[in-house]
Length: 250
Image 1 (cartoon, rainbow, N blue to C red):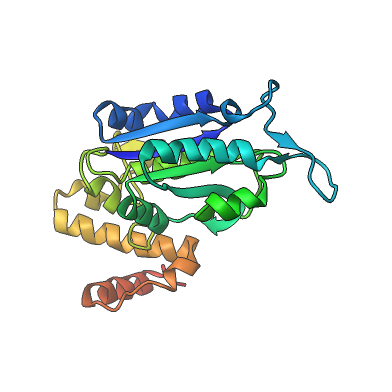
Image 2: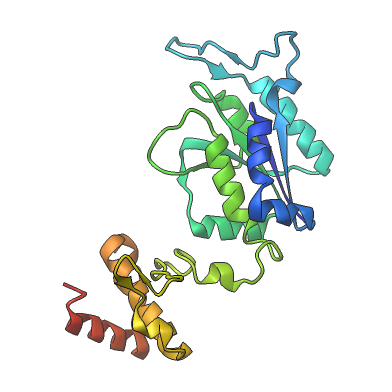
């Protein structure tokens, strides 16, 4: 079983969200487990205070190291070992699909730490955090949404959570490309028809079309990803020639 422990000030909100839909079924079937821990439960004062004014002045408050450490220590003691710990931080490395695969493959258990206010005491980070992860170049009011995003991205890769590996292996970012457009019924909607090739029943041609559209979409929307692609195969060179003739690479 793959397990993720989330340290947060809002365990009910986070836990409820991760118990729905695909991840909820994955937990029911015993493939994954997501456990939320209320950081306030690990304070030593009656007020359950977890923050204080920052040294050096400045606006806002900083989450104190001790409640965080007590919560983290409890999880590690329960696990019987130090658990790989990630702090959800705007100063962290931007999270990618390759990170989701790495975290799923390299670890059987993770701790995700959700900060609030002006952040958390640096000393806790130095002592307990193994890596910092960000969702992008922006700041949120807390780490809960990023933690849920990371937990979702990692857990859906655990065998058994999705019905088949093809459910994620053909998606955007799995192989460095964006996914081709998808269509469902009806065949014509608001005057827009499904591409005829998808109705042909020729699976080889459909796969070829999807690969072609994936190349085109990646080039148009994410040139940074496109520049890293290896399109040297004979098949891809043929698709590139077709796209050039169609004007798609202009």
